[in-house]
Image (cartoon, rainbow, N blue to C red):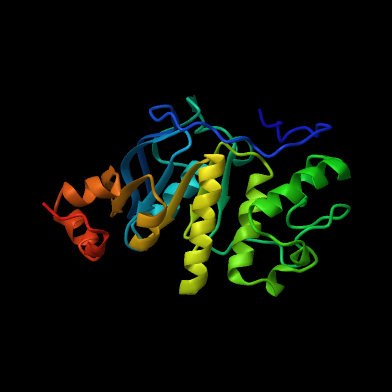
Length: 274
């Protein structure tokens, strides 16, 4: 079992891959609602995510996807509904105690810090140094984690502005993994990448998830990203869940015209509409 991020053990290993059993619900959202003044951002949203699943939430800009992630992470408080992580209600649990990590669209790396310095505060070490991990323990964790995410050692001395968008994205994922979260939340992580880097980083995200089987929710408006990454896709519209299922299920059996229209732009995936 992976060591707890709240202590600094003598020996540290990467989180071991979790078997994907299905039906073991790692995250449950029940009737989640959120308003900002007169605007309803999330409206009666229900969702259950299995342990080890990669679920992608898609929908047009402004449909409530990012607000939903922020609610799960504890950065926004829902007006209605209940959130359960690992079967435990967490509505009143502070963000830092939810075993959840949110990777922001901007990556939110500290601009004045290098990628990795084991004896100083750096982007990959700050969460661990705050928890009083030893230099040796930090080194044992970060080096194999960086290698798993294709973060080359030549990048360790660089600051975020000296990295490409794809490299920044990898560093953001690695930093999130240092706390061994139950759930990874990713807010449009590929939106700042050009097409070649988008495809490359998308493949790396998928490969890393396949190895680690970390429960992952990614939001995007890009259907190609969803089709390439997701075990299941949840389509969101005007704050509501419209339909959730595999890409094939949504294409073959769309719940309504909105679902059909959303997927019609990608007939090349070979699944005929009913």
